[in-house]
Amino acid sequence: MRIPLYIEFSGKNVLIIGGGGVGTSRAKKFLSAGARVRVLSIEFSDELKEMDVELIKGDARDESLLEEHIGWCDLVTVAIPDTSVNDAVVRLAKKHRALVNLANDAERTEVVVPFDGEVDGIRFAVTTEGKSGVVARAVRDKFLQILREDEELLNLLRAMDFLKRYMKENEVPVNVRMKMYFAVSGDEEFKRLVREGRIEEAKEFAIKYLREYLEGKRDVDDSVVKINF
Ligand SMILES: C[C@@]1(CC(=O)O)c2cc3[nH]c(cc4nc(cc5[nH]c(cc(n2)[C@H]1CCC(=O)O)[C@@](C)(CC(=O)O)[C@@H]5CCC(=O)O)C(CC(=O)O)=C4CCC(=O)O)c(CCC(=O)O)c3CC(=O)O
Ligand SMILES: NC(=O)C1=CN([C@@H]2O[C@H](COP(=O)(O)OP(=O)(O)OC[C@H]3O[C@@H](n4cnc5c(N)ncnc54)[C@H](O)[C@@H]3O)[C@@H](O)[C@H]2O)C=CC1
Image 1: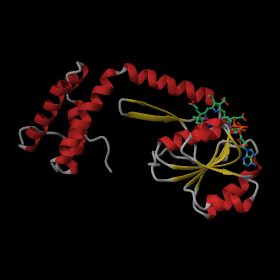
Image 2: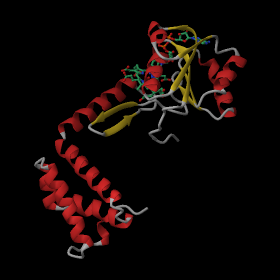
Image 3: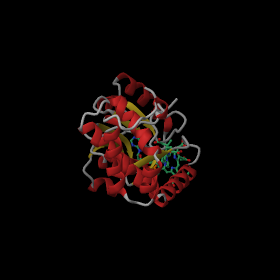
Image 4: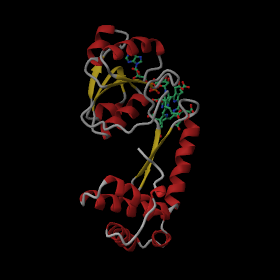
């Protein structure tokens, strides 16, 4: 089963097999994340020729060539119509401990490159695992619209991010931090300030709440904490 992860790609080596439309879009994505990108292909798109990527002219059916470049990479993407090279890619990637993305075989791919979106620091990724890119795109757009219209949620993120940083900087112990996240975010006064977009006041309220708790002026029941690690 595949699980979602956000992985730092800067400094990682990515090999893309196939320099057509799909290979070019993958190259852009990994390059913008700071990866070193190498494209192995018979032909290259004009766009790729202008990009900061290494172009290796060759046929992926040549196994020694394939192994040389798979040995270099952390992740290999197959973006050619011919699925017959997939077996060799999967085998060599296993040998050299590289991750495999098969853009030409959604069922078999180890890594999925999802449709992703971001609104003011909230990131999400959507995949139908190959059932339909059109639908995954529509879901992505729907999520974007929902988040953009939810000013309250975006304000809550700003206030909660501030509270977390404040407590970590001030070395508030983790059990108290966990308690505060749930207690403060569930407090009616805090919620009202967030709803009304009064972020600075919400931040001040959160710090005051924390101080009162630490000074024993406020009692918070352990049951407010919704998760226990
Ligand atoms: C498994 C996966 C590969 C992976 O993980 O790498 C995969 C596989 C395949 N896609 C196909 C087709 C389409 N792909 C798109 C678009 C995108 N597809 C992407 C990801 C993924 N595509 C992964 C899972 C995503 C999921 O399913 O949820 C995006 C996000 C990222 C990217 O490609 O860089 C990119 C967004 C670009 C953007 O946002 O601009 C569109 C629509 C469109 O462009 O709107 C269509 C046509 C319509 C359709 O098919 O619905 C085909 C069939 C080819 C054939 O029939 O031969 C296969 C192969 C197969 O199914 O085996
Ligand atoms: N978003 C996705 O994940 C999508 C995936 N696909 C899949 O990706 C495949 C590639 O799509 P496009 O980039 O549009 O095709 P394309 O035909 O534009 O590009 C293919 C590239 O691969 C190169 N190539 C072909 N055989 C090769 C070999 N043996 N060794 C080295 N290079 C070789 C060609 O020179 C060309 O540059 C499609 O056949 C389809 O299966 C298609 C659409 C979307």
